[in-house]
Length: 359
Image (tube, rainbow, N blue to C red):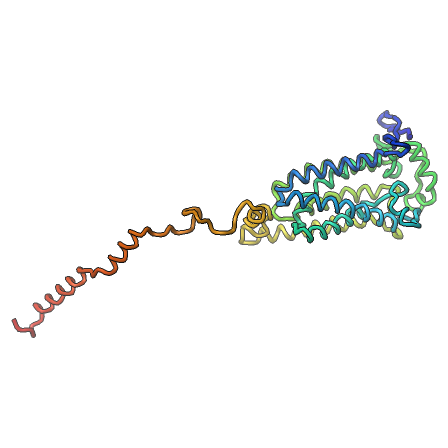
């Protein structure tokens, strides 16, 4: 149980990170909110599957295996770069209740697994990325409130009205005073801190509406995912600059460096592709798969074989009837009398006019 206050807003309340217990096994709010975010994300992805040209059954395969890869990647990333946490066994590695995960490990693990699954079940990977972008934002936005229940992912001290304080935060700062002093300078145990979980959650939910706006105007497969990376990278770069639990390599914040890099690279790629599309004389250049004839054929909505019905193909010429064919053949076989008459007339004219011909 944590007693949380927002002194500048005059708010205070108690938060229990445990939602309920079953037979002595505790269920945390963090897990519930993460699961809820994933569930809503899956529903949104399923609703938009056809919009992106994805088979729903194949999408579920990608999501299920991608979730497993995400957990493995997130846990691996956290273990590799966390200085104050050591894993001595596989069982400890798999026990998420004794340690954390890292977002970029989650993202990397999910993407690598998704690539493999898409290759196996022959699904367009870029279409899948576009479809799950909204789900990622929703999952992140809800999951950050799980961090609030755990009283984690907070920043350094602040005088802003929404600064947050709790006994759990004070204990964390006290235990890590030397490290925090080295990384951030003096961090007071009795002062309010930045609620970075709240910043990121708000940023993600705003991003849902921003990304949805671009879905209706996308010009190529992968565009929505690039915009997600840009949006998410900007927000996380700001939040990572404030957090007291950032993972470091030397003096470099790993997560901040990663998000700045992929946001910048994504912005360059988006600009170059959009420029190529504008300069291309072909109006169908890089057209999204779901808007192509090939998608209609692949999804069974259109057959690639010519139809047996007359007139179904607008460019095909209708075959002539038997009577018309016979009529044309007869016309071709019968001599045209007009030609002979012209020849005779011409000869007669020449006979009359030529003085060398006797009458």
